[in-house]
Length: 586
Image (cartoon, rainbow, N blue to C red; front, side, top):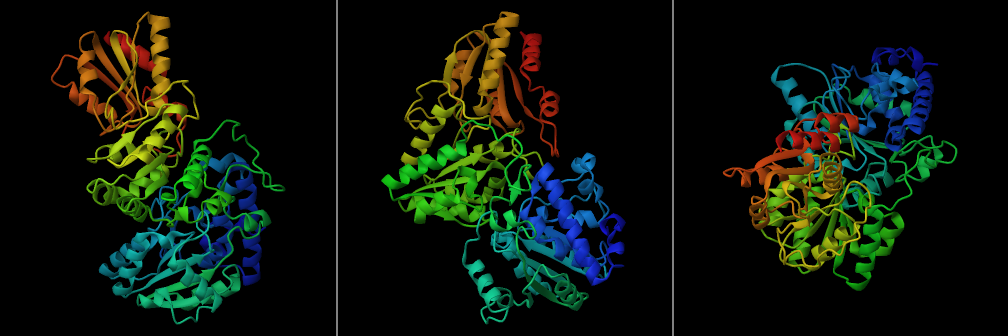
């Protein structure tokens, strides 16, 4: 096997082109074996094997700097740069990140998980090179729908003016996570259909040189073109037409399904680990919205390249028709568009993962909240129990969203409350509304929630009145609060008050003042970072008083591939630890 002898890119350069083809096959088979057992990004990496092999054959990494975007395409790159054991040995599978990671290798230059950044980063590397009078190639690899992100345009726009060596490899696999959308991708299609000769050329229009490679999975063709552009003295785009999922028939056909996968059976493609047999908020949300769409033609679902976030499968997208919009990987545009739809009398619902709403802070503030337009944003996976890669943490949405004026950020604790809030958010016309979709499963509290959250704005639900200590459990952590209350009652004979705040963005001063009559301690629990979060609002309110306040959440830090239980214990987020801390005070 050739892969066993590849310790660095230097060893790739020793092979013939025919041997490079065999190396590509070995890399692909190793990827498939690991991905089927471990899970990960399947289609993006299978499609990039030949291009990665050719890049390391022609260029001299790390002197020549390769920046991957999004870096979930970098598995083959890792295998060829000294990290193959993490792909060949099951006991080493967890030793590397799913994204580029400088701490792992000198061949990685940035921690990159979010998208559309490589061209901008490559611009910076090229500028630093030029300022220092150095030489070497800078290569930005961009694909998997990343071109639709605004930063990709901004980078390309600057590349043309920068005017020195910078090679942009556009990995055109005709897909994002789901299918691509937008005028840009129609131009890529035209370029593919004309073998790169169409007079209408997005890249040339921006002043960039351009080469097209029709078979982006042909090692020989790639080696030839990369050799041609190596050491070029101006910016150039190399547009390669690749097949997402190349070499694994199921991934080639089911591109959306195999963009990312949990462990699966190679023969059938079926998951080999349990997905759980319970209900899912994404699926339930799509069903709910489709019913609303049929009754009201102004209801529209919006996604920024992740339709599965709120259950819109391909068949549901087709059923929704023009009432479902995929703007591509462009969260900023999605928020601004939702604001304008609301201003025009429509009822927009933007579904987004917590980690990705971070891209749209300015639009949340400027385009949406300053204008006070009644758009509805559904924030999924907020909390520590979802994604655990450092690039995809979902800890930060509470401080980000809840501190913008005019925004009403809601935290449902159960199924009944979620759909009541969803109904109100879709119906009301007074506020921009965001809902932090519960992250701890579809739980029923068997309650009848209020129907008009505008009428009780910032009023908390007093679930149980006790004394001495009050526990405020926000959203997904309401059940943790229940557990603490029960533990205090059973083990310490303390009858604690239990509160469901419902609103992340406001303070219920009436209730908080009332607590001071019979309580000495207020405890807040939230599934996110403490700094700038919900609990600090409560602590600030009580600042001049005698009330003691304990805030529980996670420390403001970047953590990578963490163990959930260890993280909870580290932040004293278990019921036993919280109860113990409470008893020290009361």
